[in-house]
Amino acid sequence: DADVTQTPRNRITKTGKRIMLECSQTKGHDRMYWYRQDPGLGLRLIYYSFDVKDINKGEISDGYSVSRQAQAKFSLSLESAIPNQTALYFCATGDQGGYTFGSGTRLTVV
Amino acid sequence: QKEVEQNSGPLSVPEGAIASLNCTYSDRVSQSFFWYRQYSGKSPELIMSIYSNGDKEDGRFTAQLNKASQYVSLLIRDSQPSDSATYLCAALAAGGTSYGKLTFGQGTILTVHP
Image (tube, rainbow over all chains, first blue to last red):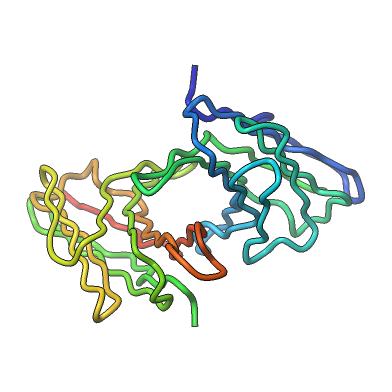
């Protein structure tokens, strides 16, 4: 099994719909992160968390929310999806030694 | 000013040459730095981490850190076509209000041609 698992791998949704992306990890790390990637823009941080009660906004948190259900689970929600949220979304976990990424979720909002 | 900046390239080098990738960061509370490689459509993979000033070598890769200049670099020796990818620089904040924040640059596209 992968160390960091993201579901779904691909998703097409309509404008205005609520959608949740899920991430789970078996690495045992406290820190978990959500990023989005758009061509030419690298990875932009949406939210990050150190435990279930410690959640921090990243540089592009508007339009997104998160839930840390347990040390191993960190979900990202789009409350009302819009087309410019079409992107590749990555979850990551790790510590000062390095961070491991999931395989990504390709989200398309039509 | 972006917190982590890279030259987006593309950087093109011949097979067997040294590829030099550069990164600057603006937040002085950043203490740990990482280089990731990302193939198209895939997730980033960790190549190197560096925390102390100076050089760190791992096989064909050497990471260099200069905290006074807020500069990080990655050298790839004996470049191979399989090294063709996007290289991402990342900085981890170790203090202040951004403690634990992991910020990436926009990536440098490297092409190694035979």
